[in-house]
Length: 80
Image (cartoon, rainbow, N blue to C red; front, side, top):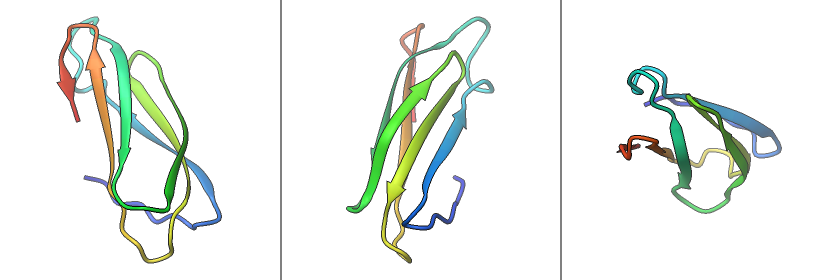
């Protein structure tokens, strides 16, 4: 699990690289971003064959949030 500090006034992108999990020619078919707690906002997210990027804004200074990226692959495997 990685930790990041984010200023509540910033809009920042965070990327999950799933290439170490994916096998052979397997690719990301779908993705979801889940945020625990109130105040942190998912502005949008994108995915390519091996990575997911989420743009997050807001939040409360000193508040801890957990952001989970869940993918479904073209082989129907699901992982967080």
